[in-house]
Amino acid sequence: MENSIQQGKVVYSGSTITTGGREGFSKSSDGRLDIKLTSPGAKGEGTNPEQLLAAGWSACFLGAMSKSAANLNLKLPADSSIHTEIDLVLSETEGYTLQARLNITLPGIERETAKAIAEAAHLICPYSKALTGGIKVETNIL
Image 1 (tube, one colour):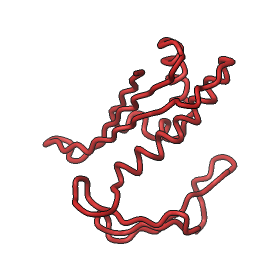
Image 2 (cartoon, rainbow, N blue to C red):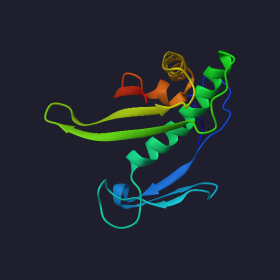
Image 3 (cartoon, helix red, strand yellow):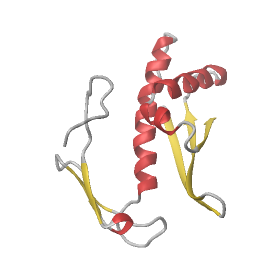
């Protein structure tokens, strides 16, 4: 498959094949990801796209916060964390949409500094860039 949307140097391409939608399976081309999918709230094994987005975004965002902290000559504490919540919302006017909350804990870092680190991270993180304007996002410093 030719990549016609490339605008810069591609440093990595994640590739999955998904079958069955929300009640199916998804597997990465390298075999490192092989998961059963379920609808949100369904019983049994499996995960859902909202959980996968929360995991991917929070991992990426922690890395972006590390970079933004380094720009301030700071290092993030080892126990820094993000509790990311992705809501699947149904409204009469817009149909299904997503909204998100990034609840950030940076122990030992002053609240205003933590807020500045998070704001700068949104400008670095590819997930934040992709989702800006597309979903409602709250960034909370705990």
